[in-house]
Amino acid sequence: MSLPSPDAQALVLSRALSQRIAEDIAQQGGWIGFDAFMHRVLYEPGLGYYAGPMRKFGAQGDFVTAPELSPLFAQCLAVQVSQWFGQTEPVVVEFGAGSGRLAAGMLDALHELGTPVRSYLIVEVSASLRERQRETIAQLAPDRIGVVQWLDALPAQIDGVVIGNELLDAMPVRVFEIDAGVLHEVGVSIAEDGSFAWAVRKADRALSEAVKDTLGESLNDGFGEATDPVFRMPGRYRSEIGLQGRAWVETVGRALHHGAILLIDYGFSAREYYHPQRDQGTLVAHFRHRVHTDPFYLPGLQDVTAHVDFSAIARAGAAAGLDLLGYTSQSRWLINCGLLDRLAALTLPAQAGDPGVAVAIEAARTVGAAQTLLSEAEMGELFKVIAFGRGLTDDALGFGRGDRRGTL
Image (cartoon, rainbow, N blue to C red):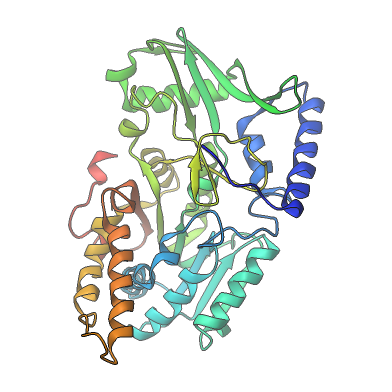
């Protein structure tokens, strides 16, 4: 794929980050795990993708998230949060708030629903993203910005609703490979030309146990019996395992005293994620609205992500003592939360020359965005929604029909 060239300033930042990572690889004996590499390219202070100054979201960035596409997404999410506010404190804790559009939309929508937020907490370590979020909320929801606070870390105790939209996919993953029945970890080294390159070594005990548990528990039919570290698998099979995402869910779950956790991301159940035919994993990079498979391209200037194993996320929630409140596709969840009803209330197209033409054009754009959110060919099926709770009734509106928790 032909990728666009960044400007000179961006290249300087990328080269500086590449040099730091290369020095670290040399100090570590010529090899680091991919999770360590992914953490550096995404979160290195001042240089990583999410910690640097470059624009990430929207038309001028590298990808568009659901809140950027349409305010309908935040409005539907607010319907679910409003229901939960009837049983917990009117507090939202958002992780990975991106541009701030979801927060702005939620603040207004919850106010309109008669369940205003008392406190909206955004956990964000990036100074540049904090500033953008502040500007977005001040512009789109100026009357609500007084209830917004930014935090550097997870609160010790949470009573309210935790939200993470496209959060887990950006958490570093370990990459593994099964070749001739032997499990290896796939990491990063330096090639002869000085570029980053894939390199394998025998998996350590922790990775072996994690992969064996993940594959053996859900996929015995596809992979056969597994004996640490030998796996009976025809050919070569490569994939990822999101240990940091699981740990995050357990940590936040233990901090949740009373309330809910709602996570929205692209991914599958374990049986789909680790299907024998998906033998190259799910790791991809996003650069200027192009998706490709080279995670080493321009470190710090592109997003690097892996899909989410929602079966593992469900187990992590259970390990934290949480109740699973539902799991379904984004399409079904949005419909359950009233997206189609909101579309039906839009202004119908007006005749040419009518003063309502501008309104009709905006309505058409809204319908187009909704199609992207709902379509199985776009975000509707690939994105999933999972929710956990502590002390709440198991009647979440978003999972009223089409709940798939039995597939996890």
